[in-house]
Length: 302
Image (cartoon, rainbow, N blue to C red; front, top):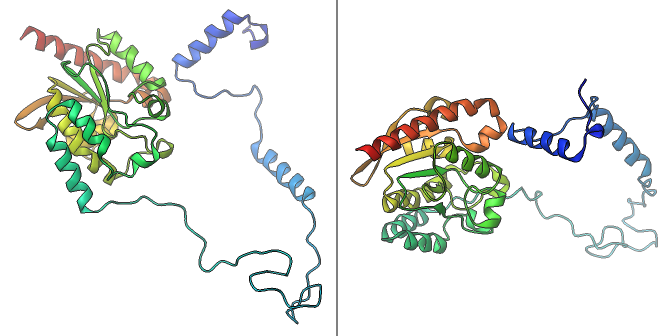
C-alpha cells in the first residue's frame, strides 16, 4: 500500500516531489474531488447577505435632495461628488501597431550593426516595439557566440525578464539537461530568442512584434555565423522557415535557412516549455536532439 505524504520523512518527500517535477507536473490535486461551482455559489450567497441594503430612494420628481434644495452641479444627490461619464466605458488596452517608420528603423538599425555587441546596443536603443515598454530588461543571448550551433526560442518568460538572460527558468533548466545529454552546454552552444522582450503575461508575440524583431534576429544569425540552427517551438520555426505548418509537423525535419549568401542547415524541434506541459512528447525531442548530435559530429569530421 502506498504511503501518504504524512507518513513520509523529509528525504522521501523531497525525492517524490523531485520525481513529479522531472515528469512535468505543475499542479497538485486533492485526494477527493472538490465542487468549485458549489464553492462559488456559497461565496456569492455569503457576500449578498453581508452587503448593506440600499437606502430608500430620494424624491426624484422635484429634482431635490433630502434637504429640500436642488443638488449642486456635478453632484449626484448633494452628498457625493461623483462625476458622470461623458461617453462609453473605456475599453481594455489594445496592442499598438507601429507605423511604417518603425519597421524601416528596425531594418536600418539591424543592418548598421557590424558586431554582436553593436547589435545588442542597437536593440537596446530601439523604441519601436511596444514590448520593451512593459518588459523589465532586454534579454539578448547567452552561451558562446562562436559555437557551431545556435538555438532560437520564442520570447523571454518571467525569470528571463528578471535576470536578463534567455532560458533560465524551468524550461531553461530542462534545455540545459537536453544539451548535456548530447554533450553540449552553454559553453559550446549559443542561445537566443526571436523576441528579446517579455510579452505581458507570457502571451504569444503578435505578428507585428515578430516582424519588428525579425531584422535583428536575422542579423544576429549572420553575425554569429553558426553552422547549424535549431528552432525551438512554433514561433521561431514558422517565422524563420517561412511556413504555416505547426511544430508537430515540422519537428525533426532538416531544412535550411538562407542568411545573406549562406545556406544554414536548420532543424525545428519542440520548445522545452511545451515539453514541461506535455512530458510524453519528450521522446520526440530526444529523437531530434540525437539527429542534431549526429549532424554536429559530421561537421567535425568534414
